[in-house]
Length: 170
Image (cartoon, rainbow, N blue to C red; front, side):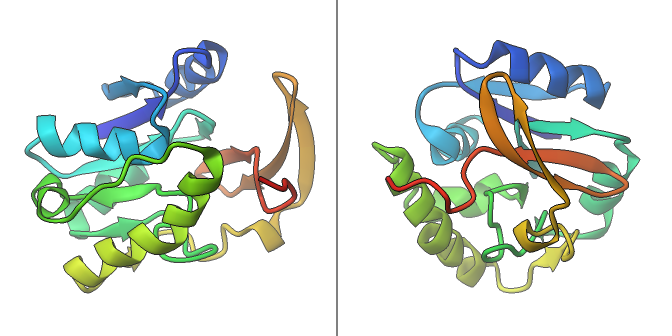
């Protein structure tokens, strides 16, 4: 299963993401940052899912199903930590066993990206990193999209536009 997280005011990002995916998916739209979407998944899903943000463009999708088939727990990248960007394969049964805080601000969300993700990793033990080279330091460009400057992370499988890569003071 694929879960895409978005917010109600980002329909243009979501449209690009969904049009590139071309696969069935669950869309969760709220104002509670990534952890709000993971909290929703813990309450409503029973099977493992691959969580993506709406700022991802998929070049192909077969790799998603290969990872779901071959690994229990997968982090898309390890930058700046395992489950950095929150994207990866999660097990809702594990999510139900740990507290999922709901950030009140982008600053809190970024802090939890470094701390809550570590709690999840400790609970599951071993985590496969899908794309260890998909890092901010390997980004080749920045581009303005929908009025926002983005650091663009790209490989043969996807393009991820990051609106915050440490340059913003929160």
